[in-house]
Image 1 (tube, rainbow, N blue to C red):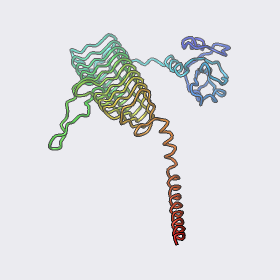
Image 2: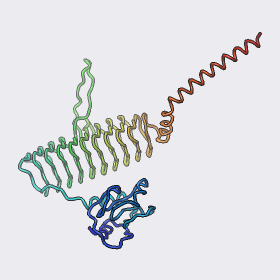
Image 3: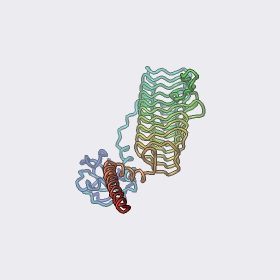
Image 4: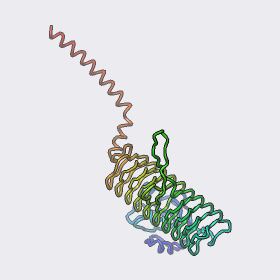
Length: 351
């Protein structure tokens, strides 16, 4: 693609172009070479500008630094980079149609232009929307509903009656509608399984990562709202509600009946206890444990979760604990010594 065409398609202002060079791919600034377009969105990489071999670089409107190549000016260089990657990605969609090795119930409904790979099983009464792609070894349960333009990768299991919206991406091994973890303790100490029969709803434009599990509840529903993005190895328990545009990173675990509001960001390995509310726009840093509800806009870290600024101060103190312990022991010894001398002086005065 010509550089000027790329600038036009990305809606960027082109600076410093003396001729219309060919751009063949997008690359990171440390590895970019001739024919590549790269980007700088993080100030930490600003120093690499002067030595880049790229044919063009995407920079923010107010970004400093001098590049030895043409510049594509953008108000959001990271977003522009993401759009550029999609322009150069080779389409890899499988052919439309139904593979002869798939097993599809006679009363299942398939929309036009679907792609159904080999060893796919689609249960009775299930519905697959238009242009949806289902890769090999996917199991779709009875009465499940999948919308238009979805991509369901290999080894995904979509259990009975699960509802999936439009333009949803399910990465390999995701499980939707697995039984919630619910048991009632009996008089003899054994655990009676509570039937998990209610609904799981995945709204439009959601992406769910590899080997993530989203459980169904006994009553009510588990719902992931539109635009949420969920990473690999995430556990969403029965009756959980995930808000619009929420971001859940790898190994997040959310216990049952918890409500996560819109625009929440939970970094890797965050754990959230059950029956709490995580307010709109909350951000929790990696490995935070959240045992209680959080108000809108909170920025928390640590366990139990506290304000991030307080956690940073506490972490600084924690690193000094061995030294502080030694100093306290020395001070205590000094105080004991002074008290002993004071007692001796008082005894002399009393005589």
